[in-house]
Image (cartoon, rainbow over all chains, first blue to last red; front, side, top):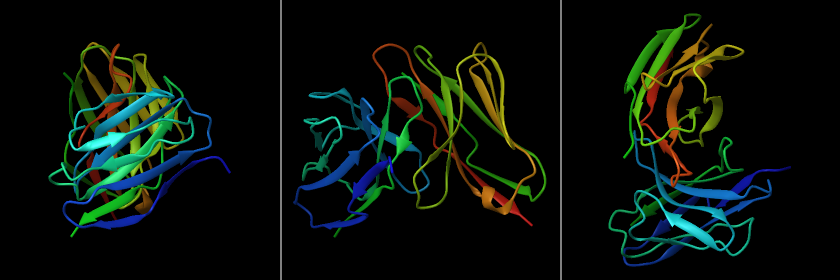
Length: 111
Length: 111
């Protein structure tokens, strides 16, 4: 089945640790995106990539890093520089100009 | 910059019709999307408007007026399962290929 997978579903991190969230898609989409959602809020764009080996900062990129070495994969690293990382993280993909399809999300909690 | 406004919460009765409004201000415009998001889940695509007018898809319809920076999502024959958040998202002009989301409207359908 075609789709987007994110792992893990739940993730716990100690303060000061870096952690990487996985996002894989087999839809052959060119573009991939990372969003953050806080309780009762909409989605805020962290990073996006329109093509392999290229990515752009979104509205809240500070404290995050990404890579796009393969078309299918767009991992997000939450670094210790991100002061308030507890949130629901959503990955999405699309062909440029079309609707975005979302993965199931990763809920990150900092202990 | 981009700004999107939606009501925070709405309540409606099963079997009724509800209209969820969205106003936006963007630098450039390349389409408006509506997504449905159940609590704790990923958003799912509902509709896309790029030209003025009404798009109908079953019980759901979406309207766009580009000159007024206004859209609405119309839900007919409401069912209990329609209780969810509804997110309005705008695709901006050149240089911004990702979506900007509103904060979402939480709809509660009552018996």
